[in-house]
Amino acid sequence: MLTASAGRAALYVRASTEHQNYSTDHQEAALQEYAVAHDFQITRIYQDKGRSGLTLHGRSGLLQLLTDIQSGSADFSIVLVYDVSRWGRFQDVDESAYYEYACRRAGIAVAYCAEPFSNDGSPLAAVLKGLKRAMAAEYSRELSAKVFRAQCRFTEAGFKQGGQAGYGLRRIAISAAGQAKGVLGPGERKPMSTDRVRYAPGPGEEIAVIRRIYDMYLVEHLTDIGIARRLNSEGVETGFGRAWSSHLVKQILTNDKYVGTLVFNRSTQRFRTSRRLNAPNTWIKVEDAFEAIVSREKLEEARVERQRRRKQWTHDEMLDVLRDLFVEHGKVTPDLINSSGGPAVKSYAFRFKGIVAAMDLAGVSRPCLSRSTITRYRMRCITRDAAIELEKCAAAAKAQVEKLSPRTYRLNGVTVRLICTRCRYERSHPCWKVTIRFSPAADFVIWVRMDETNEHTSQIYLLPTASFPEHHFLWPSTRTLWRYDQFAQRSIKALFGLA
Image (cartoon, rainbow, N blue to C red; front, side, top):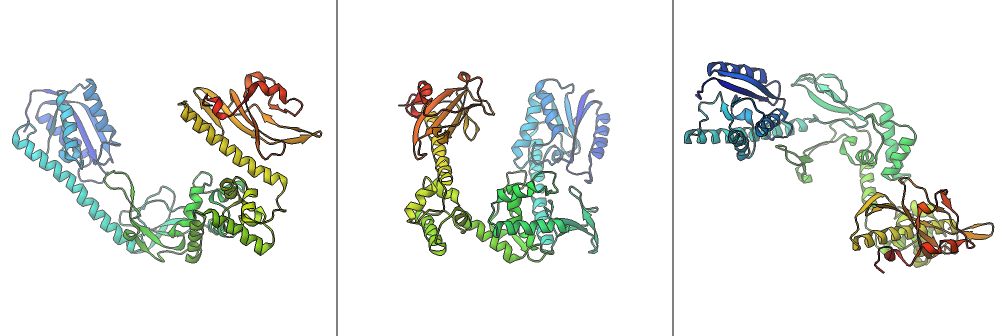
């Protein structure tokens, strides 16, 4: 055993769970006896209760110990640890050796008090210590494999392995004898380690919301975001203390648990590594493990619909949809396009520089489209193209760019807002509404002005907001446009000196 004259020592104790045979209290008692037997005065105790030894992450006790030693503030000359495995079960044994070396380099020894060798640097101690470290790491690997096999068997028996139930479902604790013991609330664990957990449908109002979500998706053709917005506007609660989101809606529309199927081993995250997805053929799926909320047919229909919406439509396929609508209905309207099961109106506007251009290419008439609808889609495309051009020019000029909002940028410390305005007719003469004040506030406004027909870009201006301190809006007209000639620019490239 390691012997020394009277000195000062620190204790380090760790336990993965409170139910281990050698808990932190037991370890501390054994280390106290060791300190008394070797005339050590204990000055500090570092603890990691309920912490895995696989990595340094989350082990505040060991982290503080290493920090104190490396900073030179340690008031002890030796660290007493129960055994090698309490120091850590690092899968790379060199990591365990590195942390011990960091202590020894600072003049602090490490003693493993329950090991049958003295940590004195001798060749025999080095061999035994390396073997113990490898055994500690192998224990974690074997335990992980055993736990995984047990989880697979319990899943095949219809029991859920950890995690929350999710919206519309509840967790039921089942005793070893198969008796239901009650519903587990959010964050609650099963009363006994021998208990198991099953899923069961939740309250009727939540089940009704889930079925509504499928109807909104399949019948009304709403998007995930659209469904979340409607539920939030109606004040429907999620039960998780947060608002509805597209992610939560997607989970309801795609997860097998809503048809009573239990799925395990979708992903793997062992030994504190990054989570990785597993191949579907390695999943463990148990059909009819509990009562379904929606039918399997409806879930599959939702999945097919999701794949259809994600389809990469070619130009010809999109135009064929318009032609089919015209043949069937004798007209083409935005509502017919959105309800056709094909691309949305927005997709046509972005792909073909406007819905009117798409209809022209398809060879269908458009008496149903109002002038304002045509202008709105055209403006959306022009604004998008101007934003893309602005970002490309900033990159070419090697400017420092920070995007504050979809059309607000900070360029080399200067805040710029991009706006595109259509021509209006007020009091029988053309004019344009230009917003000057925004949140966040802008130093300059890049104003893209449409011509009087709203078909083409007429002029680009760089307006300093400081020149209009009293205005929230400007209303230039054909009579007053000359006042803004001093701010006119040839193009967006000219703003960056590229043209």
